[in-house]
Length: 380
Image 1 (cartoon, rainbow, N blue to C red):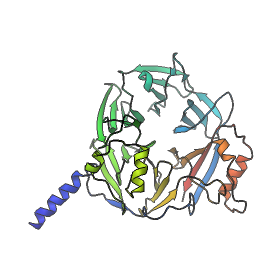
Image 2 (image 1 turned 120 degrees about the horizontal axis):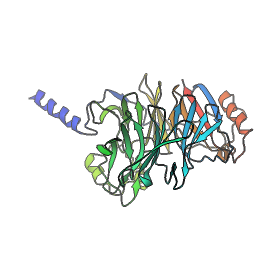
Image 3 (image 1 turned 90 degrees about the horizontal axis):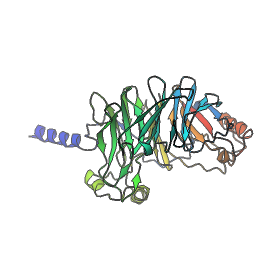
Image 4 (image 1 turned 120 degrees about the vertical axis):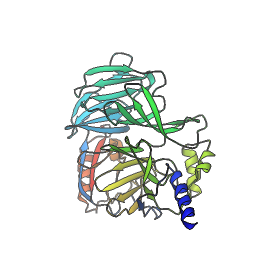
């Protein structure tokens, strides 16, 4: 009888939270008070790359960074641009407009197996393909509303994308795959709640692709889940240990106004809200909740340290992790800061941190109107 009850209990756990198996590892440290951004962090290597400001190339609000050989492809609110690893401008991929090779909206972009840059124009239901030099190679059109709720995507192979999606009312599929040839979307995972006539994202960078495996996070879930094409469902991989309240699926279903305001209300009630961003380096899992906090988890110990994400710029004494947008092929976390904000940083003059001095040296050479600077961190 005891064995029978144990089996039922296991099945119940399996069916909950992302079709939940017992996670193979538990991550500790989340409930400790957050430290000042950067306090206690040690960088094995750190460098700053100012993005060249010329040719009327204006970059603001970097959304995504990808890497092609020795160049970086940057998706910003102003366009898609290529720079070399030293920050020198190379080319632009299309521009806003109605003509050939132009787009209305920059929904997302990726680099395919042929090292072509693929840009999704969600407003016009098109995918534009460019070579690395910025030459338009192809334009593919898709049925109306195909990309209306798309947030971000990465290629599983040359024919399929793994996608994260916005939520709108009860259209709550947050992860799906997309067949580029058949022009069909296949849902993988839904959020239980809905929004109140607003379009909301569940994370800027809520998933990351590691070879043939996708790792992802979901609202209110303590799990880092994974997906493979072979299994074709999302399963738990790691789980955060916390004393905060974990919302049941029924409680999530009762959420009819999902968004940042609802998040804030639940935070004040000590509810675990989950994470909005996930990056993975050879040594760490880097988990973010909006711009409020981040959790840095060691892969060797599965111990995490939580940090404040906002930066107190009046006296900076530690090298902060700022606006992380990517992981480089060499395993560096890659973040950025706008030039005008960097000019406002007040770095502690008594600091002995060589990395902060690197930032100081760059700040002295740039103007407030320049393009952002990229920060590359390889943590010990």
